[in-house]
Amino acid sequence: MKITFEKIPRVIFVNHELKTVSLTPPPAPNQGEPRSIVKEMPHYRECMNSLVKYIERHSTMHSKLDQRVLVHNTAASLANTKHKQNTGDLNQLLETHILDSANIVMTTLGSAGSGVLARLNKFEVVVVDEAAQSSEPATLAALQLGSSHAILVGDPQQLPATIFSVSGRVTKYDRSLFQRLEDSGHPVNMLNTQYRMAPKISSFPRRIFYDGSLLDGPNVLAPDYGGELSRTIMSTFQDFQPFTIFDLDSTEERGGTSLSNSVEARLALHLFCSLAESTRGMTKKSRVAIITPYSQQVQLLRSTFENKFGGAYIRMVDISTVDAYQGKEADIVIFSCVRAAEKGIGIGFLSDVQRMNVALTRAKHFLFVIARCRTILVNPYWRDLVSHAKEQGAIIKVDPSKNSVKNKEFWQKYD
Image 1 (tube, rainbow, N blue to C red):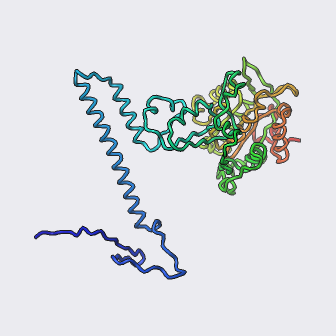
Image 2 (tube, rainbow, N blue to C red; image 1 turned 180 degrees about the horizontal axis):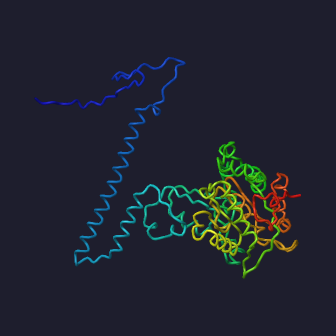
Image 3 (cartoon, rainbow, N blue to C red; image 1 turned 90 degrees about the vertical axis):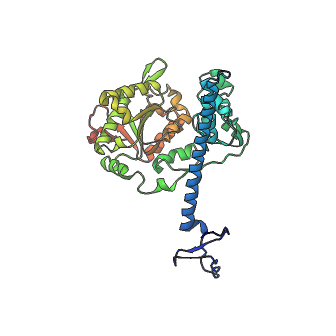
């Protein structure tokens, strides 16, 4: 007996409510009755998920098969004495094949000009992140890989490319392609909602650096933003706010071309230890960063924390310069300003507005600024920040002679 199956395509209609199937299409809903959306039906989702998995599995197997063929052919060529072939050629073939078969390739701008990427088929879309922080030639190395669309993502209000040549800055070599296009009138789409900073942290940057056009996202406006960490710190240290300035009377120290401040370094350690103790180690599980404009202060902070915790400190806190921390974020940020000279001397590149913007926008839940207020008041932007903090009751005068954060005499409200 021969069994045959009809090869006639048919559509099966499934009624999930009645749990029935039919070859006859159901009647159209009456006017006013809700219409079912096909893409939201369980059976449709299940079928689409299965199809996507099948395609992914097929693509993976096809790619591995192509790689195997490449290796086999190259091995045959190497075995043939008439055709000497370097094994490096095989690596290049495999690299090119793997990258050509990938849907997304992530690379640095420096690697974007490498030979292996130059051998690839053109990408349909090239996205350059932190495009306002790269020089124009570096960005062009990435753009030459694209064929249809280029998307530059960056913030021209933050730090530009790092250029050590004075003549390079004079000739605007540090100007990014992003900024040049913006200056020439090319349309720029601003992403006007921030989802990182608590409102009391974002208040000053939104007003000063972005002219009030930057909005707080619904997540940071939620009452429980910061969770248990914020509730514990705010209840333990009632004078602390999400944004707080510690007015510390200290002295800056010069070493070569950089500066440090040992009193600020000790306060940063003291503050970190006190927060860790009061939160029962919660801060050690969160991301904590200590940033400063000066490389010498970074070295001093690292040695101060290493003396206290040993090499394990690198798993507890990220200590970095402001420039190196651009593009990153942390739950708690302690910013050591360092400058503590007498009034009228100036505050060096701490006065750079773009660097100030980066420093004040890294924190999610708490931003603690350690500074000598009398010194930083010489700069109009820092003077505005101090006035802003004073209005919020967020300046705490620190007496460095006291040893315990829990001692009320250690914190004195700023008059």
